Image (tube, rainbow, N blue to C red; front, side, top):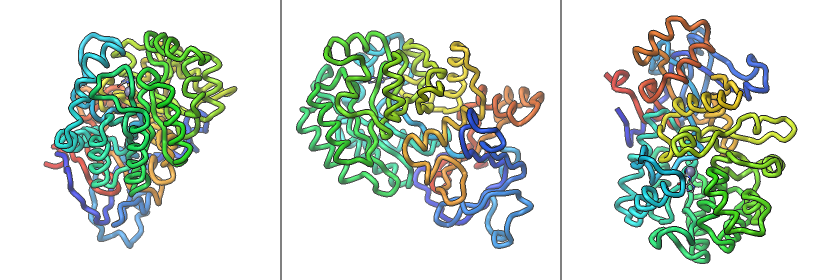
Length: 447
Ligand code: GUN
Ligand code: ZN
């Protein structure tokens, strides 16, 4: 059951196995990186923040009359954060048989053209957010369309839930249908108006959003750089080096650039506020430029496999000589699942094809705290630290018959978590809380 506009700000105790990430389990000793509290409890304050975590036996007496949601053996974890997802593509998942540029032309652009209608955008935004919530996702960095209507609709819907969400008007002024392009000058003015209206209101952030180098002229990328310079707390999101045909087209369009990354670099679009989706076919120079500028990559494995784009190599990002910040993301609608569990499972398989064995703890960390850091919101969300917003997903590691059978032989918590990540999906999500409000409960939980 999805509680679409349900606001329940009362104080509440959640009981279950509470899992708290403090740092990167890939580089920090595991006992420092994560706390796993069996028979744990978490208190949500009336304001919607995390007021207390610990063992149930240590629950302070002041909470003795507080209503309890007891989730038994389920895991109480930070809600997932999806750092690359396309709101207007929520209906076009699984569109058959095309690689990136053909897929955009055939399926994506016609669907995005619908968002010129305010009524369409306003109706779509709550449906999209409901999909995120039922998959345990509580925060997102999303593309909207070129239309202000889509940006307004998504921000308004997220604001009603007090959700952490960033989006922006997609900037395109060439190589796309007329219905999806906007002249560079007018587009920049419209973006600034949207920034003034939404950025830093409640938990919302504006992301300057040039779609990718193919659909923007250098004038428009210049405007994107200016917008970032004038609004330094905004994020920047775009696509980079996803597909070989795309890279060849960019080389043809920007002949003075050293490589694809350099196109963005020349317009001052690299930096700690910048999130580049994909980054699969990069040269050593490009990795070094991304590392030095503290830019982040969004690894979108279900999308990359679906479009046949290529295999993101985690080893490149983890190279300690020039590490690159990266997180996991769905890239709906080229991605084939809203589920960050399914995304982690695919990331594991892609890792194995590149000689990298991703652990469950690393995958959960990359889908929560690392993504919050990349969105520059980790002081208020991304882990179950006291004082942060109660953005929570409750996951049942025994949710399906397949999981129940598999968990019979789980040796320890790591093994249980790994099986959940490999075999779980939205059926494993028992409940989702955004800023302390229960926005989704599975039918079983609700019954
Ligand atoms: N590159 C430019 N636009 C898109 C998009 O909508 N999806 C994906 N996967 N890649 C893109
Ligand atoms: Zn994308």
